[in-house]
Amino acid sequence: MRPFRHMGEHTDLFMKGKIVAYNECGYSSADIALMTNILKSTICRILNNFKATGSPARKIGSGRKKILTPRNTKVLERISEDNPRLLSGEISKQFSKETGLVVSRTTIRSYLKDCGLKCRTARKKPKLTQRHILLRFKLSKIFITYADEFWSTVIFTDEFTVQFAPTKKNTLIYRRNGEAFEEKNIVKTTKYGAGKVMFWAAISANGVGIIVPIEGNMNAGVYVNILSNNLELAARKMQMSSYILMHDCASCHTSKFVEDWLKTKNISVLNWAPQSPDLNPIENLFAIMKSEAEKFSFKNRSEVITKVIEILNNIQKDLCGKLVNSMPDRVKCMYAAKGKSTKY
Image (cartoon, rainbow, N blue to C red; front, side, top):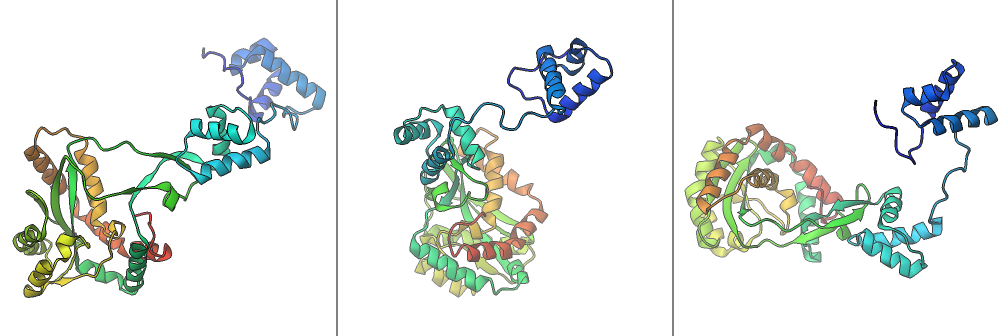
């Protein structure tokens, strides 16, 4: 037989109705306690309440009074919303300073949950200046006029890294549903770090093109060498006789040396906005690959390269198609956000 339930657990109305029904069928309180796994004292209390009121339901207004008044709850809500990165212990201290009330961290979490504020991991997004936001919004106004079929003519490229060292811990915040990408609820990231192996990759709606490990630091000369040796090869693999190249606004991509080389090769380049990885579907593929790579431990650079290439070769063509086909929705999201961070 299962142990009796812990004290403090409420008996729901359906179970109370069963208890009354068992009693009316002639079962004793002891018998009902064994059948329902509820303490005999609780059974007696429910039956006595039913005899006194004619209903098994709890009396309205019964139970323990709330610790915080509605006004105090508003203070608690304001403290959390003003600084989402304050956790329950810090919120409790600040709340005590403002109201003179001492409230436990458990109570803080409970009240915040009732207010719709739950502890989550802050999403990481690139830091956007006003200039970035303006350029992103302008680009979305242009892209939103493109037909959906346009995106199947684009080869999306970018660099990504796989880390040897563990990543930094996630940042916890309190926020409401649907507020993940508000300015105060995101962690702003930079592009560079140590202990990493860098790769260049290309995809399209037709699948994965190619992945290339990068030796040393990335610069315009290295980038031109990568394009000259791999871009046409990737296009042939994806069966694209003509295409538009997409790369971001990194200085190694936009230097005059690279621009001149692209012109001599008659390669069209898609206009882009800085700090816009959320618009590039290849970033979602990179996230999947990194997640898979993090399941393994590596002794050296060669092992990292072998595993990442293996992971990419196992990527289904349909996945790339779905990611590229999401471009119209990405553009709409950026337009709706007026250039600010989106959910992608």
